[in-house]
Length: 415
Image 1 (cartoon, helix red, strand yellow):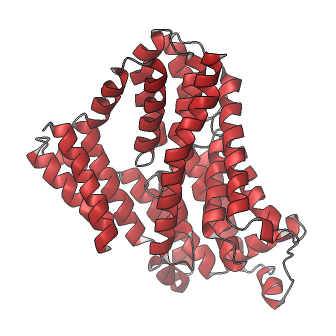
Image 2 (image 1 turned 135 degrees about the vertical axis):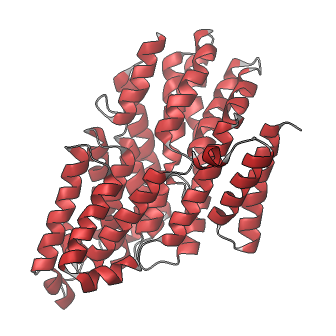
């Protein structure tokens, strides 16, 4: 049996054990990374730890720490109250407001995880207060981020369009942007209907004593609001790291109000941090030993262009559900270039299908955006919410690639 197949089977075993024995998948993944890395891939310790997502670790810790302080001192209640006034108390509009905000942020150049890190804690605090499904609200935030994610000036759009230009492939910048926007709007609409959005129609937020208290600004809330604005400016204007910026701002607030800071440290989503970092470390081992490239080459050798196209979309979706979408697009699109240069499949449609497949799955709790949503949700059964995100992500992985393949590749080829 080849090393690549062994590594895939070990991943399956990790899933089975984590599901049936209720063991943190991150712990299992660290053990799998050590075993496969040492015994199968012949990697040393540095090679195994090369896949550890240090930047994501800091983002998860920093963002959950900062927003734990914001929740503890009442700042998130103030922001939620302001959002209610913005839509004149109509609760059903809030999920779409969060969708639009994240779409605008990514559309003007914010990295998708940075936009989600900013919006998700506020959106999920609102969901907790008004008994809205956290899955509904989290999905709206992530799909909003991906909806705007391929504008010509966005990070995703710049990466993909740059690869297309460099490889001399035909493409459409606006076509790519609208393909992602339309798909994510449609998915958001389905999610809104299926997960309770319609029952929110007509519901209005009552103005009670809690709202009046939330509307009052004190020095702690004011300072925290300044910190949140500073986080947005640091990430979007100065392009500083979201995790390091968040943890620095949280430390400053902790120094000023130590009692709140001590309470917030205990609310950092440590189980989620362990889960995500462990899984991504194992994915790094898979990449280092060539398992991803092995799967891509196997698909390219099928000899049936339309079949190869849908399989490549599936590979992009599956791998991206466990890793950074930016990195996956940077690797998979060049991997598909020889296949596209054969001219048997329209390059623009194939690139749009692959780009959408590789990003729409970011609702997975193992992907950066899904992990941020999981970590940001207050007052939830985190194990249950993790399973919901995993099932929803699995449905998206299974359903979206063939749909976008049909819409952007197969039908244009047949007509």
